[in-house]
Image 1 (cartoon, one colour):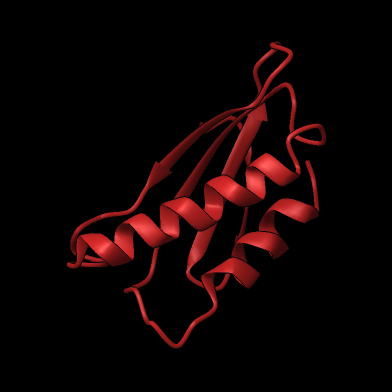
Image 2: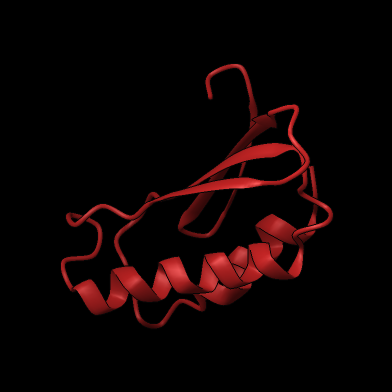
Length: 90
């Protein structure tokens, strides 16, 4: 992913690059040290996955990695952060 592009929104960082396929491949990194509770880690993953599902056509042909880069805070709307990242498109 070093040769790809990246952008950030709130506590999330998106890295992406073309993969030459007809579909998007998504990887998520939600470290335990950033979110000790499994419930919170799974919520972040679920929200990001749903946003990619909604914008699937726009992202076809890319490998994407989404990383939680700041400690999880329940007050932050991770859905809004994910929407901001993903809706902008490649």
